[in-house]
Amino acid sequence: MRARRAGALIAVVALASLLIPMGRALACASHGPTCGIAALLKWDKPYFKTGEVASGRTSVRWPGKPSNHGPGRPEDGPYVAYLRPMKQLRGLPHKDPNSIRLGLLDIDPSGRAEGLVSLEFVVPAVRGGKYLVEMCNENCQTRLGDLQSTPIEIVTDEIGERWLVSSKIDDLEGDVINTKGKLNVAIHRSKRALDRQEKAMDYAVEDLEDEIAELNAEVTRLRNRKPSEPQGLNSFAIGGLALALWLAVVRFGRPLRERGLPAPSH
Image (tube, rainbow, N blue to C red; front, side, top):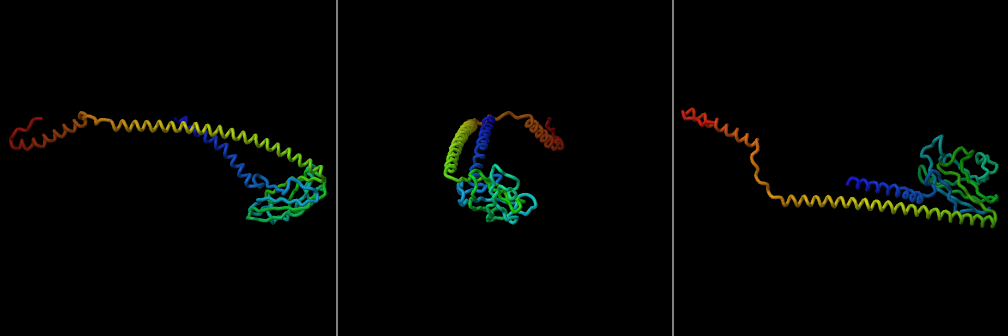
């Protein structure tokens, strides 16, 4: 019985270990780009052409109290955004000859330690490819809270755009395949865990039914039992009776002797 209950407990723990990470993943997905270690700008398009207006936004958390070390707060700004080629990063953004100043971040605090950050700029005339938008205050002494550098893709002509769209489709198809595989694995594991839990619950129900049957049998036995016959006097009862008899002899024998009558022998 204990082994079955231990099996049921193990099944419940296994199911929890499977469902908790799934719940965390769903919570992270609903929270947005700030879920995790870093906050990244969320662009309004997957890629941009030169001359287009690009915009991105995200929620950012920063320290609740000012500090000389660690991430910066809004009052440590203004914060500047730079466009840098991802394959040609050289030192800090404001000193990199390949970086292009895009503009200032717009910070809208919604609490003492969090707020909404947005950036809007015209995509400069650069070569098509992958770039990095880096953000820091003047002289790049600190970053704003958990806001990190964000990748951005730029195209310059229709050929580059078609190629980028095609590569995006391929990436999405690969993501779909990987997601389906992971989902199938998760479903299979969930079914196995549920099966184990169902078996453990069946064992627990059987144990309870056995206990109930045993209790019902005991109740029936007690109801049908005949009253027991009176048992003989035990040694304590006999000793008590002898003592009471002796006391009676002593009590009633003394008056008889005083009257000259023979006392009962004992």
